[in-house]
Image (cartoon, rainbow, N blue to C red; front, top):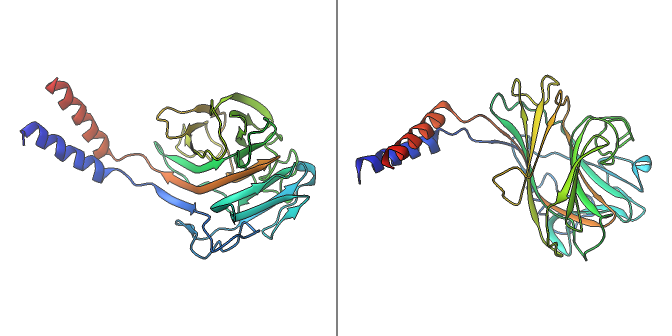
Length: 294
């Protein structure tokens, strides 16, 4: 092997072994022994992993936010339901809006500090079109940065479980079943566009949301701005970017479905620290060697 190639190989090895691994706080593959009409069915029987261990969901249902309820018990109101491993979709979370809103929110406030140069990662797969192409009135969504509240989903309270367009601190992005998306900061729309130019029934999309504290590395201490980058279907460039002035003080995460049926899978929340100095230095040397070879 040429000396330069040997050096490159060694540096690559250093980079790989020196990079700081992400800390997976929570992962749910929603795989159960059969259909469960309660999102918490077998939640502690191996379907979840991560440093937090097993975490239950709070479930909220109702026609709109004013009629939402929320407990860790099974919720099924007016045709609205939460299920795991639906018979037609094993190993997934199924939220049935039934003309209204279905929502689930993890019983943990994900405010773990990633540190300067790091970020919080929230990733999942979603299929907002489970039966047939519909109108933009049916959608699947995620909200983050909300607080807890005695009235789960209470309009204007800033609580988790709230309708995505309600007032109060939260960031939300929804994926409509006609291929369009819309983004909200509280009740204010801050972006919209197309996430799938040719939507088809049963198409699954991967989503990752990265939240970075721009000042002190902590996106959840209410000090300094927080940057939110949304990636869709493995794109290397953020699909959508937003800077939240002042950041957030809480981070309860809610999954929602409105109008029809939506499927979610492989929900993961991680803390990704800054790459180590050895990694950054190695990458710099790799770039220098490449320039010299050219």
